Amino acid sequence: MTNTAFSTLPLNPEQLSNIQALGYEQMTPIQAQGLPVILEGKDILAQAKTGSGKTAAFAIGLLHKLDVTKYETQALVLCPTRELADQVSNEIRRLARAIPNTKILTLCGGKPLAPQLASLEHSPHIVVGTPGRILKHLIDKQSLNLEHLNTLVLDEADRMLDMGFHEDIMQIINTTPQQRQTLLFSATYPDQIREISDAIQNDPLDIRIETSHNENKIEQIFYEIEKGERTQTLISILHHYKPESTVVFCNRKTQAQELAEALWHEGFHALALHGDLEQKERDQVLVQFSNKSSSILIATDVASRGIDIKDLSAVVNFELSPDPEIHIHRIGRTGRAGKEGLAFSLFMASEAHKVNRIEEYQNITFNIKQTSTLKRRENFKLSPPMITLCINGGRKNKVRAGDILGALTAKTDLPGKQIGKIDIFDNIAYVAVERPIAKQALKILSEGKIKGRKFKVRKLR
Ligand code: AMP
Image (cartoon, rainbow, N blue to C red; front, side, top):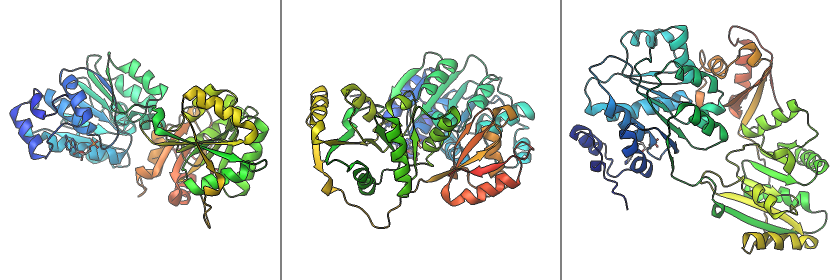
């Protein structure tokens, strides 16, 4: 077993006693695996969530290298939201107590510029902030200089990409020295994270505390149904388990479309994804489902190929696939990133051979339940937590995620954390907002301006 005492690290005695004073007795797994490498100056790509102790892992690393006698910005931490940036700054401040005179500055959108500009007159040693505002200081105001940066941290990188900050991040990185340490933290590992890591990191150590796809974390439940019971059984499953986001797989596109309509009729927010949709419709369906403003996606295998959907609570095989490999692929979309996943399959007695084939393929015996065990709830509503606002301007109008976020939060009291994923296309943009603030957000965007221009904004059903 590895020794997880902080004293095994080559830290100075003041920092060790400060860490002790903070009550950190043992390193968390991300710290035990990451810190020795971080302190050697190497890059890491780490899968770590809030609560893992990731902030202390990178903060101890960047403070270790800091030279406070030099009034230059030596470390930059990019965060998706103002709230996270504040938390990160606080944690760095606590750990910086062992190093007198460390100047740490938080630069986030939605805050007035003047005090930030005043603070930047003397370069801070460490900057923590959101990409849009950092870029504003770097390029528009030329108030921030990253020529002497030696540590760059991307925190919650997946969320920053979800919010459309990719271009901003790359522009920021272009102003930093090639010779630098880059630490990338992300809760999930979509292909885009791998791509960004390849582009900006130097042979990073890949640290994953939890496996991202563990079949044991998927609970498979089979329901034996009679002819004509599929839709009602699916509705009972939704009542009983209340999954926040579900993908339902159908074998045929007409079935997918009809099922979406039937669920919609029953008050569920369900959207169909199949080969007959135009590109724009398909984008819109995926945007609404992935930003949590639709709870149920009804898909055919072909249409769902290649899409990366995170945080699925459940997968339902409305009809079993005749191919066990497709079955495994379908259910693998739930239970990701160390989360528990539920996979439900409906079959009729005449399809028992398909169940047997999957059992043989997976070498397990399935738990087969009666539909009578599913309980319906009274006055049940499975409302998605978010609503999508659609803006009739996109990349070609130079609308960026930061502009939309800024328009929503700068002169208002809307907290950034109630704003979800932002998706920008060529001529259209979508922003997800929490349901309770949807009306207010719609008003702000329709009556105000984005990038000095008025845009038409509407709420998507
Ligand atoms: P984070 O995952 O960075 O959001 O950190 C989660 C919380 O754990 C924060 O409140 C930290 O102050 C705390 N923390 C970080 N490292 C340790 C440690 N080694 N032992 C105890 N608490 C810690």
